[in-house]
Image (cartoon, rainbow, N blue to C red; front, side):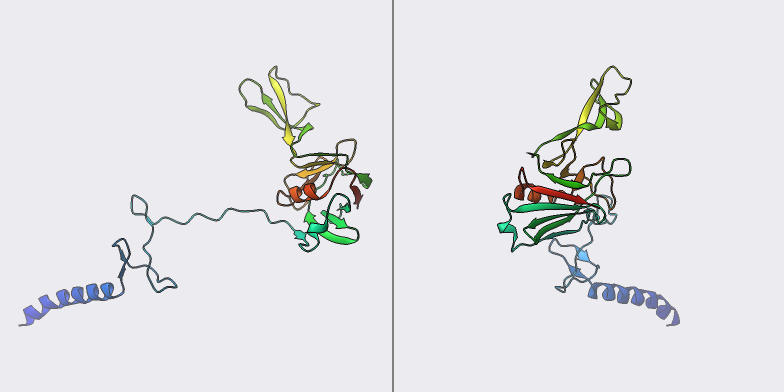
Length: 223
């Protein structure tokens, strides 16, 4: 009798373990037995698996740059090239578009870095172009192979290569401010002055500014 009890006890434990496991399981819509966490709907979800049954992690969300921006939706429809004016604040790294004295658009910008300072003063928009490339700054590439010779190049300083070709940096939604080539355009906007003198504006904001101003719109650049 003692030997029978010793043999039966492990079997009984195993059976109880199986019952407990099954009591905490559900079956998914695809017939999978699920041991995972319960969702807000009270149903358990199967773990996603790859071909070798290793758990697959969800991809991390894309890192989207966060820039300060403001738009007055009530005043925006009334803003147009006939009443707009632009203010560039070099100290605060902000561009502001007014209708009279009313602030309608404000955005973070990146202006000229040390040695390529954006000039202060009073100007007017001289040119508008939705597609524009710099004729001074860009990269030098090998015209035959397409390989990059100089990634941060100057058209006035060609590399010593017989096949060197200059490709200007794209400057979408270009607004020329000075005759010398300073303007506003879509570009990389870090938290500090980083350009060669132009006023870089985030992609999310420059097309709107481009639409609301025109040739002749006043521009004031201050420190």
